Image 1 (tube, rainbow, N blue to C red):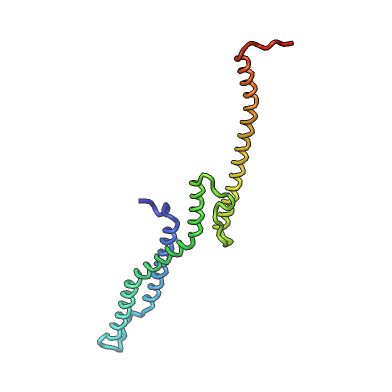
Image 2: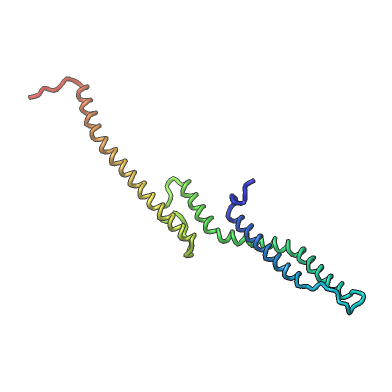
Length: 176
């Protein structure tokens, strides 16, 4: 099993948000339960007021124990949905990059989608598009260099081949 550090960011965000929500709810429960007075009033000889105070504390604890897991599940689902929505532009960029790697001749005008927001994800997409443009220019330059070098090498080879063919074809023509 993978450690939480190796989980996708969506699941890590869900875990962190749920843990934070659990701490907040536990603190709220502690603050709610602690101030309830636990003392016996001497004015009531049969202890009815003390029993009532203890019942209130027990009811609060029971309600917190019942509600806390439900609220945590709701918080975890909300955290997952929020992180999924927040990371949707990253998924689009990843899918476009995957298409670029599998397509033999990708469209180079706008290789990766840039979200309309001015945030880190848009900056990342813009930077990646700039990098892809530079890589394509470098590839085109390399292809042009190879074509030029090939042509430059073919010309002398063609002359040598022609001379060899003429020499192999027959005797030297008389020189005047």
